[in-house]
Amino acid sequence: MLFLAYPCRMAASVTVRSADPTLRQAIRLATIFALIKLAIHVGTNLLEPAIGYGYFRDEFYYLMCGRHLAWGYVDHGPVVAVQARLAELLFGHSLTGIRMFSALAGAARVFLTGLLAWALGGRRPAQGLAMLCVLCAPQYLGLDSFLSMNSFESMFWMICLLALILLQRDLWPPQRAWIVLGVSAGLGLLNKPSMMFFLIAVGLALLCTPQRKLLFTRHAAMGIALLLLIASPNVIWQAIHHWPTLEFLENGRKDGKNISLGFLAFFLAQFKNVNPIAALVWIPGVVFLLRRAQWRWLGLTWVFTYAMMFALHAKDYYLVPVYPIVFAAGGLAWETRFATRKSVHWDRPIAFPVLSGLIALLAIISLPMAIPVLPVESWLRYMKATHLYDSSTNTETDSSGILPQFYADRFGWEELSAKIRPAYHSLPPEDQRKAVVTAGNYGEASSLLFLNKPGEIPPVVSGHNTHFLWGPQGATGEVVFSINAAKLPAMLEYYQSCTVVGHLDHPYAMPFENRRNIYLCRNRKKNLTEDWASFKFYY
Image 1 (cartoon, rainbow, N blue to C red):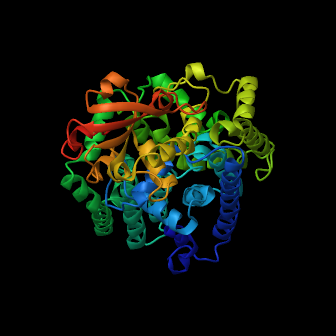
Image 2: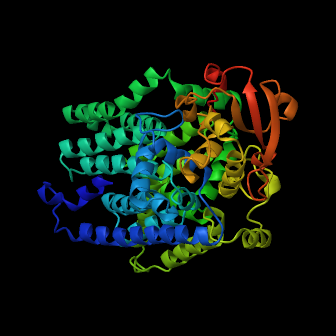
């Protein structure tokens, strides 16, 4: 986010000076929209605990990764772990505080959208419409509402595009533009591997247009070298650990973890992801970019990113980080259309407030599907009245419960801890010293570690994703609390004895969690530490 300061420090630039009134106006307007975005997330994150929602499953995992800082992890990059660690150090267990950096990244996305519209030549109407679309997109509202790497993804992508646009227009000197791009791209690669596909799309788009000349300079070589240098520690970590992320991705591909959508379904999903009415902005934006030789490379960037995500059978929302640029162009397309109509004063055409109002109205109506702002029972009644959600059509794996996974994964964690604690403290002291908890997935393991103080429960281990790399912590398997979906006969294949001491049964939690028992098992037939390789589960 430090790169956001660059547009404010253009006094040294050859062409644009800080006295430029359009730049000052763009920054002021972008700041207002960014603050609105931040206020939305701070407010809703303060509300959620009061109406019964807790931490999201993945948040526990990232927080534990933050306590084990490294240059890589099985299923994500190191940036989110740093984000989690800083948030916990600054804000403790505050739900609002833990999510603060994601909210700030979302606000940065809105701010960058305004600057992108300005950099393309748009004035206040174009900037405002573009930022409103980003502000009201359901996927952005959801992604920025919890601790994750996804909120930062779009920010890194758009900083790269902004640097190239300013370079193309001679508003930034080449050295500055390529340093900003190199640092942003490098951090983006440390944040999420999808940055690589975006960079490929940008590179191909530039090569297909006259703007390819931007790539063949010594400053470009410097920027590319810088991004590779920044990303290299993660590559080294991957090699040392035998490429776990590639194994993770391959396991997901073989087992059909991501639902493969057909061409039409993938396209229609984009309407849902970024607000159906906003399609009246982003589709003209794509056309606007493709029809103008100066900006065709930006339109091709969207096309190539779309094509790669579809070809790789990515989840439909993997495309959403690239939308701010086509919203910026769409705002300019609307502004250009009305600017050339002499019968309408372009600065205040009736179409702008009508379109903006419809986008905002739909965002308000669909807000409970993006962020938990209603208690569960009220949410269920609202969904029934509006027909916005039908659990029978849910496509999430193992999800046939009353809530979508994005909401269901906020329930049951405190209850799990509450069942482990008394079972552990009922053991004799000698058994307590030998005990360990083996969790079936990173949500269970990470929640137990985060929600309990040392000594309240036994050490917790899991073979799921990065937890596997943290090892068995010397556990022998003499006394084990196993959180497992297996039936008792299957458990006795591994242990001399097992008894059920608890059952997960929260009515709002994911159904697969409620098919799990908490077993107290004794004397594992194979030493747990020696047999740790069998626990490995990258998925």
